Length: 119
Image (cartoon, rainbow, N blue to C red; front, side):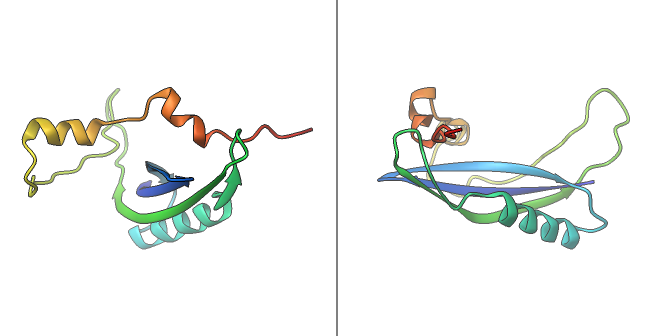
């Protein structure tokens, strides 16, 4: 089992949102996992849709960031993702943690909500 991490970008008017997503992919190799993930995203992603306010929401894939293999679970806990990196920026460790953990509030997410399906 593999996992592919990707970064998506949503644009609504002048607002920009980013989404990190990890897809679990049943594949025999890293290359096959990337290929299956790319096909899945192309088939399922709405590149352009309307939100609940009638605004157009554009979605694009910024990049496929990582692919990693998941070993069999040997206990009640399984590590699904791990990344080792260095801080090559001018940010302090406190600021770096703040940037990495910054999330949108419920109110900030409203422009991304789908327009209700009229049935």
